[in-house]
Image (tube, rainbow, N blue to C red; front, side):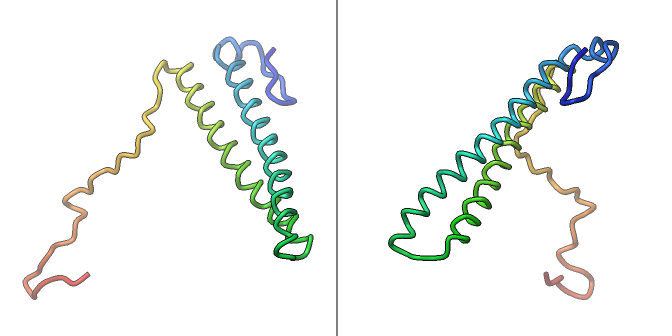
Length: 125
């Protein structure tokens, strides 16, 4: 049986998806990286702000609040990046192809473009 968190996956399902164990390990590692980045980010920002408090005094509660909020944003970003890598790994293991994540902007259809002029004059945007 493969464990996904506290849930156990049936052997038949695990046999149908041979990359499930690798994907589960990748997701676990992604969440741990996010947790560690939160802890280290909050501690580091707290230390930096403590040094700044000597020159620019402000209440302690703002020091904690700013550290926690900034560390949360950083932790979310790290977890999102790592989870995206795990999703790509899952697709590679299941289909054998890596998804194309390049930022290609599709060209709009000519039917969706507004006319530049009408029989009454130019169209103003």
